[in-house]
Length: 283
Image (cartoon, rainbow, N blue to C red; front, side):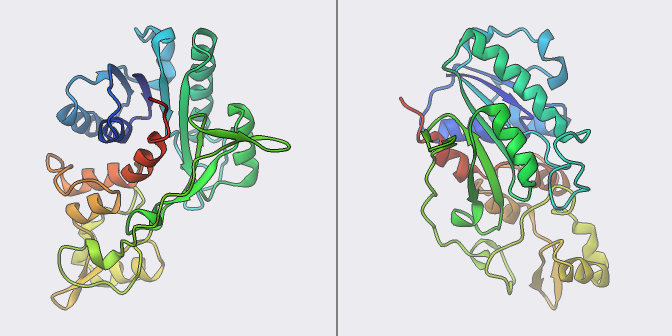
C-alpha cells in the first residue's frame, strides 16, 4: 500500500500495518514535532516526511497512487479535558484539512481507504459534523479491551461499513477483551485501580511531581494522573509502563526521554486497536 499519515505522531499506523502483515510501499508522514519524527525514522527509516499538514498542496506526492489515508486530527478542542472550543477550535479544526486532502484523493482514486480517530468525549454535535463530512458514522471502542488503560475513542473508517436505515456506519466489531489489568503492566510496586486512567499528553510524563508527594497525591485524587505505590511513596509511570498502556513493546521508546515518550504515547493511538481495524482490510 501507499499511505499518507496526517498528524503522524509516533507512527502507530505504520507499525500496525507491519504487524498485521500488510506490505507498505511508500509511507508519507505529516508531522512537525521533532522527537516524533526522530522516533519514526528510528523504526522506519524509509518513511517520507512531508511536513506541515496545512501545506499539503506543496507536497510531492502522486495522489492517485494513495491507497490509505490516516488521520488522528487534534482533539484538544473536543476533549472533556480541554476547553471545549469544538471542531472549529484553532487546533481541532485541522480536521477539515484532512477532509480537503481526502476529497482531493477521491477525485483521483475513489477507492481510497481512510481512518480517522478522535476522543470519545467529543460532543454529539462535533461527532455529527465530522461524520457528515466523512459520509460515515464512527464505531466507539475503548482501549480497556486490549490494554490496561481506559481510553474511549471514536474511529471513522470505510475499511468495513454497513448501511442502516438512515446512515452508513463503520462496521468494525469490538475486539475481544484480553483481560489486561493495571497491576499486570507495572514493573514494580502496586496499584489499587483495576485499569489505569486514560493517558493524556499533558500529564502522563509528570515524573517531576514525585519530588512533591502532596502535589502528586492531589493530582491523583483529582483523577488527573495515575501513581504507583513503591518504597512507601507514590511515583508516576515509567517509560516501560507507558509503552505497555498503549500496547507497544517495552523498548519502543528507548531513544527518547521519559517526558518525550510520555508526550507521544499520551497523544497517540493504541497499537492493538489499530491492528484490529487493519485486520479488516481486504488483501
